[in-house]
Length: 118
Image (cartoon, rainbow, N blue to C red):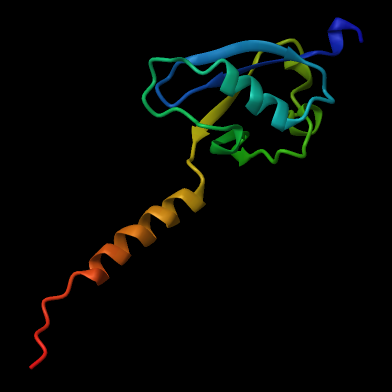
């Protein structure tokens, strides 16, 4: 593949630091981007994703779907063809973990009883 066809991306984290830039062919999936972010996540940031599913990538104000390709997600700026594209990264822990923790917490409340039966 000619190097001219590669798209250069960097990923902006919530603390303002960046991961990258990296070069990808337009056929690369968003899931591959998430794997790259996870593998290169800085060790000194407290809120870190545990898996690629905890990562959301935002580009052009839209959350990118795993099944989409880099070429499909690229904004059509013809005059900025060789520029590095910045995508924003949000860490969002999976919902199932939060619900499980809440259920355990709610069940603890129900087991405490101060009733007296006479």
